[in-house]
Length: 256
Ligand SMILES: Nc1ncnc2c1ncn2[C@@H]1O[C@H](COP(=O)(O)OP(=O)(O)OP(=O)(O)O)[C@@H](O)[C@H]1O
Image 1: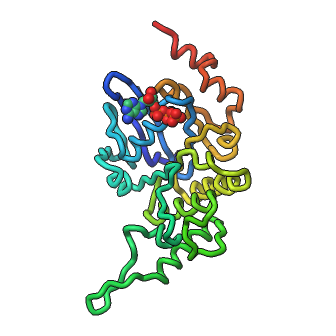
Image 2 (image 1 turned 120 degrees about the vertical axis):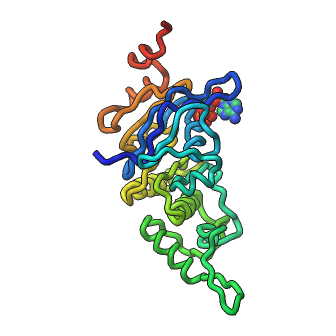
């Protein structure tokens, strides 16, 4: 088996007296969609915020391709190849797709000391990424504000790929989408993995998770309580792992 892209070892996060995460060990592999499931408050968001450099862990370490990393900001995580696509997407409504994809890192050339944007090159790069993702957008010059929810997800994914992301974390990407758009975003998720990215997907929709995930990890009360290959589990078992009715979880949670 290939080396994982990222290993989380014994991760804990405390907020004052509250333990949001404890003893989380997890491997995230390139080319794989890993779904993170768990009830409200299980610790999923806290965990991805640690991966994304938004929170430092209270304990434990993250190791990327064999080397320990310590992020002090989301920028640090981004330079290690980690991109997070939060539900809000953080796109600029009145800018075009290419402008959004290159925001803050525009390609420029200098003529007689005056900087000019390399618009054509940026547009070509974005067209290439959209094509690779099989995302059809009829007018790439249109402002992002006029795009559908699924198309916006595609733009956010293009931005991540343009930053050379090796791990893309998607937080409930389909929560606000209609059925047809959901299908497209799930297909995009698979294509990211096929391209060699590691993908972590947070979702509350178990059927959707079975459509795209290779592996399923369940968090409960701040702990990782189960890890399964999607092909070796089923909807019913996953529900019982989330609710704690599963015998494995009951054994873990039994008071000493
Ligand atoms: N910044 C914070 N300060 C204090 N407590 C926090 C903070 N962030 C999260 N928590 C607490 O940590 C625990 C885990 O929350 P987290 O948001 O990670 O869960 P979740 O699994 O993502 O849930 P949801 O699906 O509702 O987003 C909760 O008890 C939450 O109240």
